[in-house]
Amino acid sequence: VLAHTLKKQGSHIAYASSQDPSGKIWAQPVFCLMKREVVDSLEQFLADGQRKIDRWFASQNACTTVFQNESAFANANTPDELAQLEKFTN
Image (cartoon, rainbow, N blue to C red; front, side, top):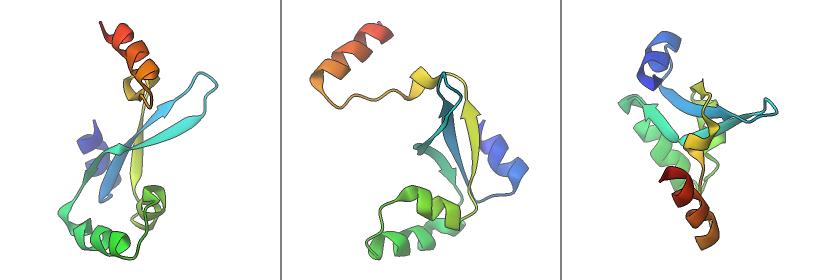
C-alpha cells in the first residue's frame, strides 16, 4: 500500500497514518518507505541534532496513507500495556 502511495503521489517518502474513533488522523512515521535520494538529507537532519521526524517529513514533501485499523499501530510503554496487547493478539 505504501509503495503504491509513494508512486502515485510522486513523493520520496510515504508513511502510514491511523484514524481514531473520533476521526482524528495520527501519523505513524515508524512505518514508512523512503527513496534513497533522501538519505543525505536525513543524515544531515540527524547530525544537526533534530529528532522530530514529522518536521523532516514535511521538508521532504512526504505523503501518507490512512489505515483504518488503528489497533494495528498500538504500542506498549509499560509491562501492563504489553500484557493487554498480548491478550488482544492471542
